[in-house]
Image (cartoon, rainbow, N blue to C red; front, side, top):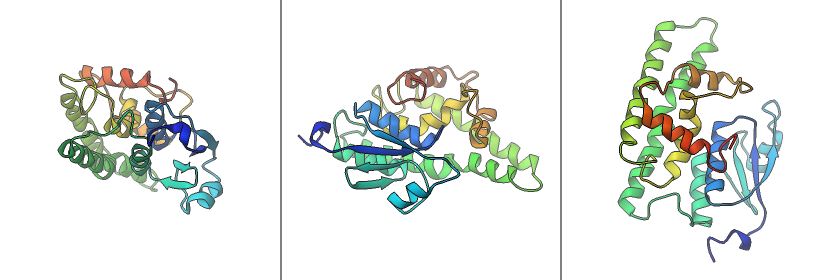
Length: 216
């Protein structure tokens, strides 16, 4: 059967500690009940990932010789190889809407925290610019609060790729593991809050208990 993991070879997941993008992949794998062999790298030495994929970023998944990098692409490929249980809507229009959401999250939502991290690495920082970018992060949390009105997950009552994409970043509005001291994650922690956003808070706790979530 196309979605039967037992008919396929070993799946290897190249990962690094605390990676938000890797957690996207582990959530997708967990949803489908698929185990992968974890191959851990250090951020200071990306040579193994570069040898396997030709680029330095994690996650990378080797689907028995089919090497895929970039977390949205990994989730899409996983959906093709193992379509059940689904992560994408079967309806073409709803699937297109989810694709648009994922593009927005990747290329619009992620810009402010990435830009704050860049600014903090400069010899001199601009507090006003950081304040404006942080305001966008806070404002956009209200969008997620509205998206969760009347449903458990971002696109429906069922867990989907949209939740995989957003959760590893939005969870910092609620908590950060004390051992997780990555600058980017501190930015997500400092400039997001679930205060007066009960639906977002409940959604974070709901996914936190799912297989593949860090600490689940």
